[in-house]
Image (cartoon, rainbow, N blue to C red):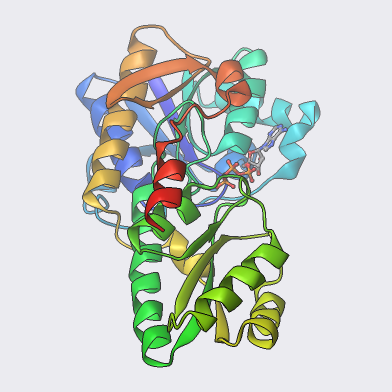
Length: 317
Ligand code: ATP
C-alpha cells in the first residue's frame, strides 16, 4: 500500500510521535509511506515525499510537527479538493492518514466522499473530538497549563492577589476544567459553565471579606476580555488582580509520555485499519481501548464524558 500522512489545523505535541508510528508501522507491513507537508495546502501543492525510517528518527520526543501544518479554508470548495485528488492519483497514493482536529476530519470526510480512503487521527490540544476520550496533545497542554498556574499561584499568594488565567479550549471545557482541578483553582469558568460576572465578583468580594488571601480563577479563552475582567475584580472585590493569557505556549513543548503513547498507538492503529480495508473512519481511544467510528459519526458525536469532574469541582473547590 502507498500511504500518505499529513498533519493539519493547530499543531499539537505528540503529532510527531503519531507520524513516526504511521511510518514505522507502514514500513513494517511492507507499505510505502509518504509525508505530506503543510496539511491540505501542501497536499494540493504536491509537497509529497517518500519517508524512510530515518526520516522519522529522533522525533518521538519533539513537540510541533515535522510535517508542518497549515489552514486552508478553501479546502471547503470541491474544485480545490479536486486538486488534492489529482495529486493523490499522480503519486499513486492509496490512502491518507489525516492527523488533526474536527476541521481536519471534515476535510477527510469530504475527500472520502470523493473516493479517497481516509483515516482521521485526533491531534489537537483542545480534547474536543468526542469520538476519542483523549486527543493527542491534550496531556502535554494540560501539563504546561498546570505548570504555569502553579507558578502564578506562588506569586499571587505572596502578593495576596487574585490571578485570572486564561487557557485554551474555545469550544471544549477540558483544558480549563482539568487544569483548574489539578491546580486547586477557586473558580473554573468554561464554555459549559459560562461566565456569570456578577456572581464571580460577589463571590470574590465575599472571600476577600472572609480573609481568604488569594484566589485563582481559570477561564477558557474567548469568554471575555480577561484584562477588563481583572480591572473589574480589582474595583469591586478588594483583591489586587492580574490577568495572564497562557496563549500559544500551551501548544508547544516536549510531549508527555501519555501523549507519546497515545500517538504511537493511534498512528499504528490507523495503518492496521487500512490493512483491514477499513477507511472513512476516525480512530480514537475509549476506556483505554482503540476504536473507530465513521468520520461522519465522529463529527456529529457529542462528548459523553461522565460529569463526575464537574461534580468534583463543586465538592472540593
Ligand atoms: P484545531 O482543533 O487544532 O484547530 P482543526 O483540524 O479543527 O484543528 P481547522 O483549521 O478547523 O483545524 O481545520 C484544518 C483544516 O481542515 C482547514 O484549514 C481546512 O483545510 C480543512 N477544513 C476545515 N473545515 C473544512 C470543511 N468544511 N471542508 C473541507 N475542509 C475543511
